[in-house]
Length: 105
Ligand code: FES
Image (cartoon, rainbow, N blue to C red; front, side):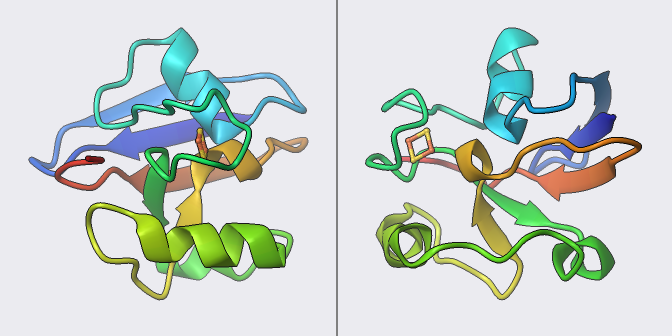
């Protein structure tokens, strides 16, 4: 599986990950800027906010209520395709595209 991260200036990085990794873990392991992940994935910081490409958003498993609630605490306002990247896990053959917000704090 692969995730392409595009930052707020339009610079893209395509990175291979492993099935079961979260998008946040792939970002952190590879030094992708634009994701802070202060809580390390425990769904309590909202600094791993990303915007998922619109046509891919619907194919992801639904978010749970806790993530939905935390998305109201992001530094940049949530959009219709917002997710917390620590809650999105890579699956076989995934080719996901996300954009990181201008700031996470
Ligand atoms: Fe803290 Fe995702 S890393 S909510």
